[in-house]
Length: 341
Ligand code: ISE
Image (cartoon, rainbow, N blue to C red; front, side, top):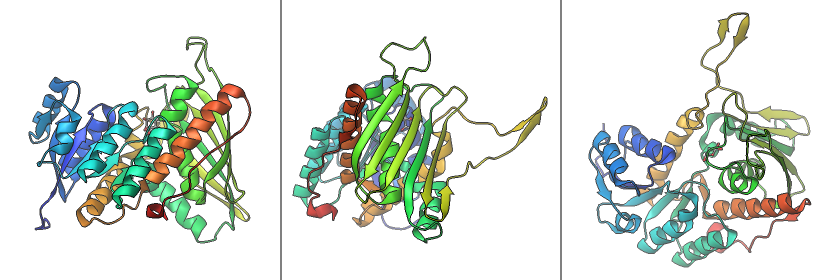
């Protein structure tokens, strides 16, 4: 039976691939919330989605959606460069916000967000690092936290897209996509990234000269532990993400949740989707409902917050410098405000 208390009215800003998935998830799966507003630069696109999702209000400007009395909380899935400004507007309006990664495209903009949230004195900002809600990643964390592999020493990650989402430059990939891997290492090891090095290559001649669509990150963390990630945006065969914690007595790695094994023409194996949202649909739903419940209860969100978005952005920015200059780069973080301790 539906909870009698009023459902949270959610507005979604930006209805590209991820924003549309979030809007449809709210409409179809959010038990304690309703899709009340949409905004996109392409109004016709917003109106088509609205017609599919219970006819929520459609706004021309994101600020109008944020300020609307018909919106209690905001989900931001607009282009990366708009995230920090829109999050600041949500903080100013006193509204909970789930911002898709990255929090910002520059560490100073991310810093402005944590300063504004700290000044507001309440945790309004949540980040869309959905791997923290993925059952496989959660199983790895639970096993490692139990001591079953001894002290975790090394985080290893693989992040492969079938093809670059928008841009194959190293800087774009490090800011747009690598934040997931940096956050996964920080979260699973429970430490900050102190130093990062990035190396990259262009995987194929048909990509622009500036492409660095295959990247290797190496990180040293605050407790002396290590992390490394392969980030390959032109893997071709499909989309795959994995994480492994290597400990003193063993390792714990995410498994691929395969639905079937295909046997055909002397081949036996499992199909791999090229759609980067498909493997994480469970995680997106868990993240969404956890955010809704935290916003309704004005309780801390169990996933990533503004500090995590800032820390990931600071590491991404240092990785961009490392990639350009060819040597490891220190990750500079401000002292953590009391709000995040
Ligand atoms: C995309 O923006 C995402 O957020 C996906 O989770 C990530 O795996 C992909 O590489 C990004 O382009």
